[in-house]
Length: 241
Image (tube, rainbow, N blue to C red; front, side):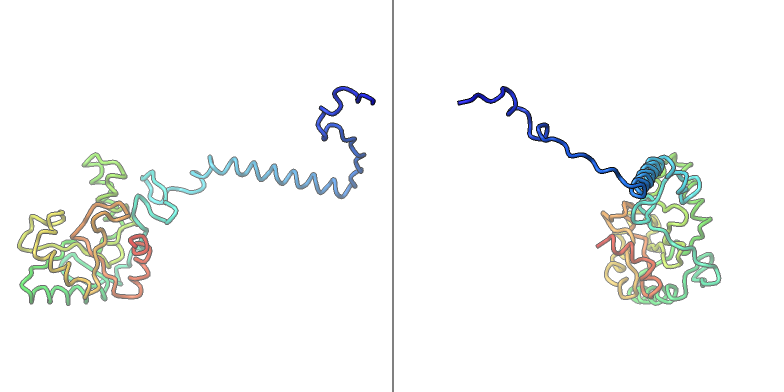
């Protein structure tokens, strides 16, 4: 019985296989391969540049605020809202304006509250983007707040519901000390709103634990009684579900 050559079977099959002679690639095929390789390298270069250049290509949405939009379009928790043109607003009190449909609903709600012995007052309504800019940046500087801290209390300009002409801040005329404070929820007016506001198409924008990350604001209500208003606030409604 013969003895096999030592070590041959220890060599992996891939190393034992005799390679077949390679076919010479035709010129058109080689040219296509060169072009494909060049395109892949160029694409890789673009991907490498996207990260560093993204901040230059996509500017911050609010000048002076070093924050960028999230995947759902929010800025520091707030959705973007258009600024309503002044000619589309009506006066509801000196210095206070709303969209006509919101103004009519608010007037009906105040009449119903008055009939029930409530003193429902309007503290704030429409705000221009310019006024919102002052409320955000000036107060932020006065209170030495970070942008994120300020955004929990006040929306950046261009991201406030008040600029739509559909949002109001409400208070109890008999307890002005609770105006724009969490303690407003202890008043008779708030309890009345909690029971009846939906009948007039007003809803709380920022309830406790809201997913936008805005502080609890029992005084802030928005009108959703028109197609335009529903479309405008649909992203916020969807997030709250």
